[in-house]
Amino acid sequence: MESEKKKKRGLFGVFGTAKEVMYGMASHDMSRTALRTRASMEHLFILITMGDLLGVPILPPYYSLRLMPYVVPQISTWKRRMLRERDLTDVLG
Image 1 (cartoon, one colour):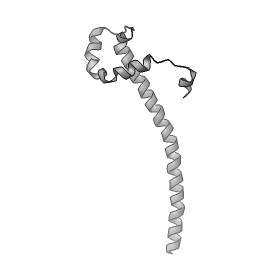
Image 2 (spheres, helix red, strand yellow):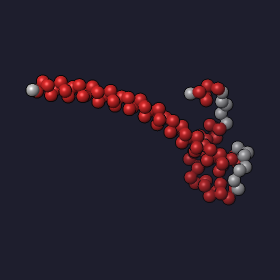
Image 3 (cartoon, helix red, strand yellow):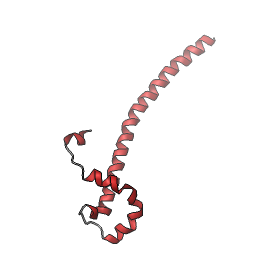
Image 4 (cartoon, one colour):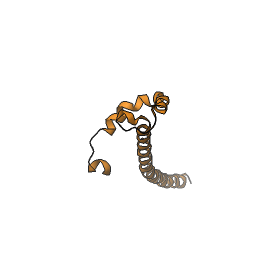
């Protein structure tokens, strides 16, 4: 009787592990896509609010100054990313 329980539990364990692996493979791609989308939206937001730093005046300076405390930690990486040269392989990856 115990050997049947162990056999049953082992078989369900294999199926359970396979189910978790498949779920992980599917959710990993979704989470990477969500992170890329979030990063692009953040960069677009900073471009709209702080475009004056690159010479793209979009919003009046008053609103940019009101948002400055929230954007300051991200400005250096944002400027580096916006001014970086890009090619076709960057879009594909």
